[in-house]
Amino acid sequence: MTFEESSGNVFTDLGLSNADELFTRGKIGIHVLRLLKQRNLKQWEISELLGIPQPEVSHLMKGEFQRFSEGKLLIFFKQLDVL
Image (cartoon, rainbow, N blue to C red):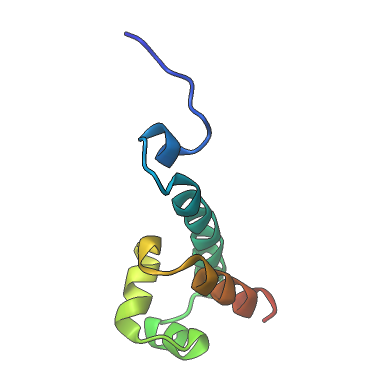
């Protein structure tokens, strides 16, 4: 069996052209998700808090960060980090 050392960015290792953007979104998204889970909120409460429709909250909670821009995820993080 042959093993390759990771670059530290799975998206780069997969050869994706937007690897850095995907990696950044993932990192921010995970922080947002952790903050939300710590608060133990219902999806409708998250919807009101972040100002997004409940179906989008569902995507966020499933870790589907590609559905949100880097900027939008940063806004969520800032909103949650100051509360």
